[in-house]
Image (cartoon, rainbow, N blue to C red):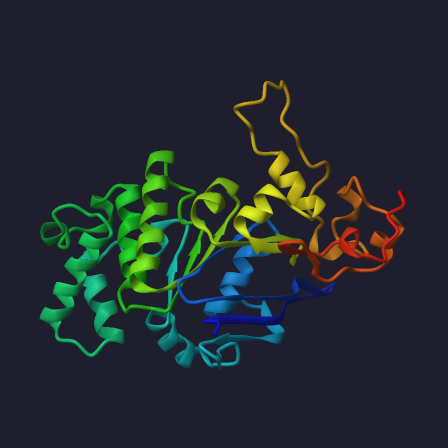
Length: 326
């Protein structure tokens, strides 16, 4: 059984000029112990998807339709107080900048102890023991001493470890990690990735990893969903998406990654830019930038179609599509 199910999710932002659809009918699921990567350019809808799941959509954004189920229970229609109990207890969150998750006025120990006691029926002494254990598990040396330190007394990599410890404090079933390594240097990135993989395995937690870095996806994830203009362009096992991409957008992303074995003067790029929400083209949203677009791509919007080991929202995968250049 899936731990998390997202069914036909639509997120809209009402505005003076009409309603903008930021997430457009996406569906996916994550199994217990699985790491699903969500990748795409800025503006693709990755972080909005995560915010919808965790109940932190900024007004006037709203879930217009669809369902989000955690352990078979619908959570997208819960009120603020009900959702607050699920956040932390059932869903842990790791954000890009650890300083946004940590209160600079409290020691990290106090923040961990309060989080643990808010969700688990334990004494202050037991909560402190758990907090020290979590800091040790996430690789912070001399945890018993560092528990009394404030966030500014930690380096960026160590602060991110504290945030991971906070996310794990109440033993959640799902961890939502939004660009958790972007602000860190490469050597620390690798350590945080290994840490995420280990805690996922040891705690049996599912992880939704949002990033724009295909290298992080390749190193960390079991499956990957590639997003474009608020929709899923391709989804499947990470090795299949990376080695045999079926959607032209995924092909472009993979081709844009530098290859140290090939001597070339210029990097590959995808011409054009992601469309604005008020200017998404008819048919497939990628068609103006797609080198393989044909007439059907500009008229009809494709849903996810079977494409070997993956699924791709591309008419090239439809056996009945006659791929003629437009």
